[in-house]
Length: 161
Image (cartoon, rainbow, N blue to C red; front, side, top):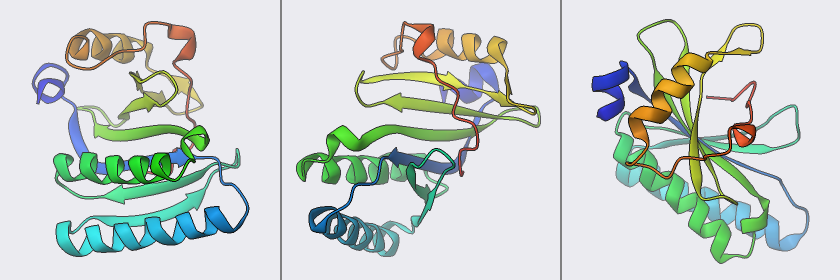
């Protein structure tokens, strides 16, 4: 709500979890369990789940739901299942998509290994809207644990959301 009121950023109804796929029977069982959990979630909460791979070799579990709270719940479910199964080292990040007043999107990125968030505002041509990113940092700082080291605000080009 703060992002919408102060920056004109509205939830886009999409989130994703990026992780490095592993091989082996244990990971195959984890994939099956994640799909079963999300199918149950889709039935109970009407959250859609799809998976894809990006050009960097990361697998994305993407969720679609107009309710931001249910997206957060779905992302948490995916993350905790992977952590419980011992695959937390494969988790890269979670991403929540927001629409801006302009034509571009804003993403809030959660870094697992740092337990922090940062804003990512891509522009066409693999550029970033640094002004928006810094403004959003100021808005959500205090409400979310923000990554203080700007060098860790990695661009995530081609997010499949």
